[in-house]
Length: 482
Image 1: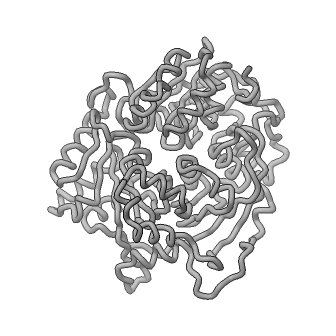
Image 2: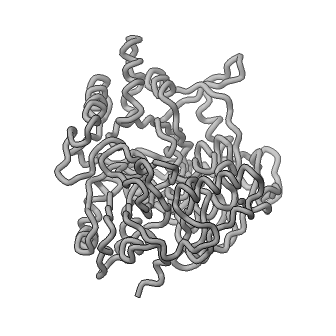
Image 3: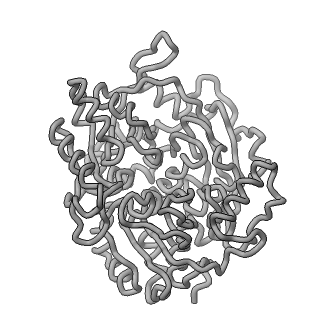
């Protein structure tokens, strides 16, 4: 069930200015190569990221058609989806994964592409390690064969996921052919109370607008709430843009963005012209998107998913919604199916529900600040005896930085498994899975049926909430831990 107030179009408070351009207008104009007779446009791609799961067929197509990679210097290959996260891993650890991991390495070598494979200091989840390595900058077009590429819009880039045939097209031409997508701005007004972060905010937005609430190609997230988030929390927020229907989510670059970039690419801090250009990538005052919406936010409780899509969300102290409260018969059917799969009862409390697994990681919440927030909850405590808990850093860089700070010792002493970087339990394409009917509190982005393993029951939540569930052996408000 979704808030009806969102359905009414709202306008920004500043007056419309003819000729003012949105961020998307600027990105589109800067990357348009040519307009085709059929109404489509050739768009230049600045950065192409490829990984082990979605690239083998694309490279096979290049080879079969005797084509080369047009711009290998703009392309980066990362092994992340099928890799093992077990200590001492190798390319052969995951059954069936060896061939795809080795194929990525061979294809990268064949075409002169920089490859971050197992054992490389730059390896990690592609959406985590690319910002780590300073590969993404405001104003770029960025594509990858993965829907959560939208994460990188937090850096002021136009970043989106593409299919395998499009991966091949970008490899061969460094362009895509596309119709101009619809664009939208969602302005977030209000506040987040103490202890409530970007993951809670993202889940709350999904609850309010639903999984089809922003079915556009480009979604700008705006408002004071967004501006007040640090860079890594903006990545968490943009990561979940695809879950409400948007191909990409974008946050305008500002001082927070530029400070993040300068720490990773020192030359940026010395380039005044580039910094000024980055600042201009945001929407002009008085610019209007095709769709303008706003939400008033007053969020004071940790959020959890209860069902099998990311919009089925409640606050930790709320009762599970009644099926009779659904807007229509279709929603009632969806809720019944979700309750059956999740083994929950309408009207009862999610608070206190026992869990058997906890996963802290993924491209949503596998960054250093995520691990720091989880460690703050865990420090001095022990994992509940009935819980298996994993911490999987989002990249090798994150892992090493966390170890420098001693976070790994906090997790290990508490009873967590400290793993190597990769997608891990988020996607269940490796050995990290949840058994049928086991309940997992996860910091990842999707709670679909079978996402973490056949029959797995997934509750999406923040790093703090996942950490508390591991300690209590149940879903609780992490602020209740004494």
